Image (cartoon, rainbow, N blue to C red; front, side):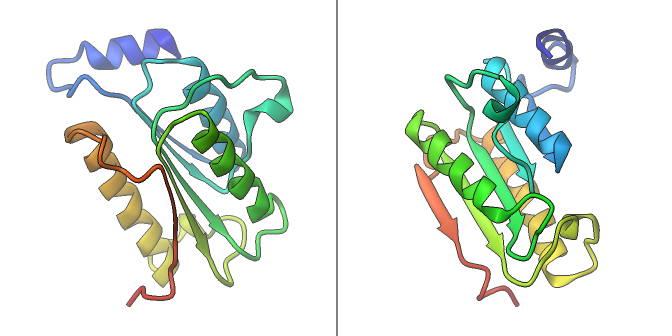
Length: 149
């Protein structure tokens, strides 16, 4: 991952920042990579879990956005809750969004209310972390989705 991050940062149109986005097992891989590579600026994890479960030692994290469906039976939402606590415990900003009545994979369909909201949050998080200073992000925020139009 170090080589890829270095390559991306060296590109002429690069902001000098690299973010990872992962879904399910890819989210777990992104979590592990973000924990090990200080060149990763941010990580967005859709229904993933902590990479410690796979023997990866996590000593640091970049700012993270965690998105999970409350009715996910493949990787339960508590995995994201525990990951959020772990990230916060290591001093990194983390935002955890729990979507009611959503199952595993909801983020793949951006035509639904929650899928579209997850995409908007992803884009905003990328903007905040990769194009503006991110020190203003809350240390931990659990965001209600009941107010989504």
